[in-house]
Image (cartoon, rainbow, N blue to C red; front, side, top):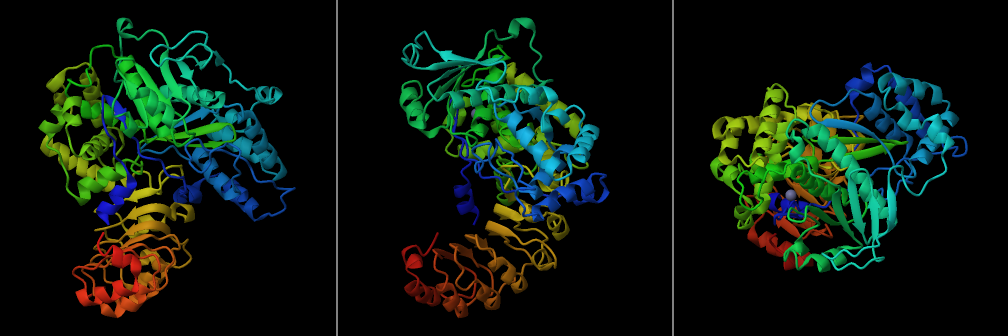
Length: 613
Ligand SMILES: [Zn+2]
């Protein structure tokens, strides 16, 4: 399962200067309930009452609230409707305690639709009889941010949607842009406080990108404020430049001459032009924009000669950008909630998998000395990125029971010294090899305890906990929407059948599920078989027999099944042949015989074509 899963997850990041191929982002399906918060919070009753409005079907009296989600693939516009139970979860992100293992930021939504969204939410709460109570809860818990959620009298007074947010200007460019051969009048020029966007994309995209860049800058300053304290002479002058193409095709065509391998990228920061080149496909492009703009921010604020080709310590430059790429966002009314870092960040799952499952480790000396040139020659760049991403999270996230403040300071010092091109001397700030590996492993194994259950925020629906210190109780604290996952890897953990058999629990809905070498037995199989979206199931070395496999008969979506090392035998051939989409069966070490497999392959044309993965 491992390799297939890795291939599917696509965390390839291919490196050319700062040219990076970002992973696609997955639709946000997460929602976790912090039960301890629910049990003790003075706001518990309010959240319950908001949730209860979901049961009211009188749409006129109780219209569904609107909200949007910039970090969400499936919510491409901010006009999507949210059910009240989801709304209650988002309110909890605002009024609940701040998370410890990650950074959370609240920003006002500056898009033209924000005032309308705030007003719609206010109207909905008013109709539901909850406005006064909600306003009071917001003012108590988040006095500074409350007005953004439901709008202020001032924002209501000017509610008519302006096409251009405050502080932005947009016009047709009157000069040519010679680097790309753009003629006057053929592209737009959008300017915000710190950015100039040269754009052949539409005005809406250009404004979204300018606003996104301002937000990224704001968050970046908070996260890395202690790294770079450039003196006045080092401050970059002028605005930071973003070039926005109308499509991916246009991006590739235009940049081929500047960067021959541009086709493998989804965004590009060119240090020589000090420009981010980009195309915008809505919310799914945001993580890549965050990554590239992070490179630009560091580079622009540190004119002390870090050379991406020649300078050692390249990993930490990428690590910081990968850490920022964990950007996960929700909006409620006119408020944006942004989480950075945390154990469930999308790219960190690959780091955990490679290190804990495969014991992968690039020796520190080699890793820390590598420069951009070295990485370009590397055949397995994804592995380097996974270690860089993991170590950046290790350096910046909180870990239960570890001295994380000191570690964060060391990491930030190290990052700063690499940017100052101090070469190998930078290592002194970040411990090498033995102690580092042990602490890193501990972080990977236990960091999920820091913010548990997971905050219900977008983009975090692939969870790898292989070889982690995780048990049934922790996982059973996840609520229904937390259990909807693209990938859940619980291999080599202490989980038992209780995970699937506990009564009065929400069901699991997982697409790729690994239970390798766990105590899962036949008892769990009816619950597992009930997951309609299940496409991959790894039962290697589980206590599963033909009786359990019988539950999978005629499963509609299962494509890959691992039963190696189990007692599953030729008796299951009939059942396996009834699974219409099954195309891969890994049975080595089970009681299925080669003859049995041939018999199965005869009945199943998909398997006959592709007997092995
Ligand atoms: Zn990068």
